[in-house]
Image (spheres, helix red, strand yellow):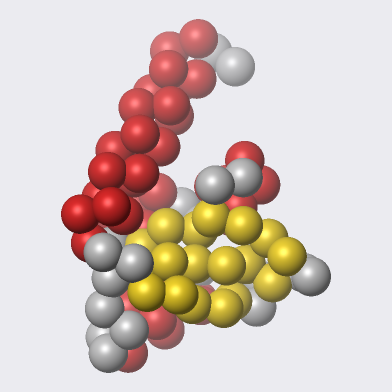
Length: 82
């Protein structure tokens, strides 16, 4: 996961969608999602960023693990006042 990709979508949107923005490539945001059949989730993600997106499927437990790591990292930055 790149830092720019991590900042491209709000964490609360990613958590609600069980999704993870992991890379920006060719001006497109690459997003891993657990359930590509959830059309409302895809729409919510698209509305949360002006960047065009490409989706890939990943296991929900792996996405959730990375989201917890991302949340902890944001907490550390917030506490440090950076």
